[in-house]
Image (cartoon, rainbow, N blue to C red; front, top):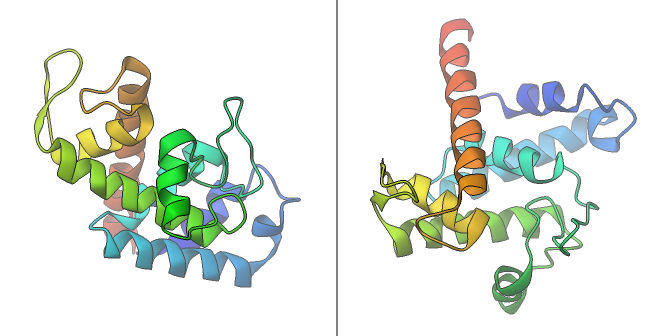
Length: 164
């Protein structure tokens, strides 16, 4: 798994950002993403794509509805993480931990089942949808995000196996 390369490629469109310019920072991010993902039973590549989809890996991003940090936590989700002493707005490591913890909690809470259109979904897919929408059955917007990011991760993982 080469998360440094993935992060480097994701940062290519924004060469002026610190994460794009600083190799040591990319190393730190990749180590933390990998460790956090594994701790919560997630694919590190999927967590990377999820964080990129949420914030373009920008810890300072504030969403239109008050979402903060790399994982764009808001509302009850943010409060739950802050109750665990995670500084989701200030520290990218805490934001990633918050998101991974909540996705894992969603996997456990939702389990396997059906989406909002009645299609069967895995616990991971429903956990991601729960993270995105607050509902185990998800919403059309949440399912678009889940499907897109899972496909991105699968493509990266397939190409990685072919070429590395």
